[in-house]
Image (cartoon, rainbow, N blue to C red; front, side, top):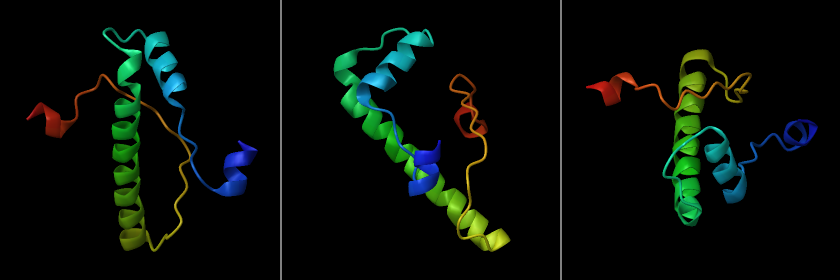
Length: 84
């Protein structure tokens, strides 16, 4: 969105938006009272992942300001690390 472009920062969803999205996607056992902790963990994981991407891009491609062009969530896919 233009707002995100202007500030050059990702805007995380609120706890209510996160909860609503989980329910809309059919997740079972989701409790609204847990959303503050769930959202904090989710955001911390995202920030850590983005930190790794920035380091990778800087080291391998001399790009100190990478941009996220596309996001595709795959929450039900098991990563190779989790599979082991």
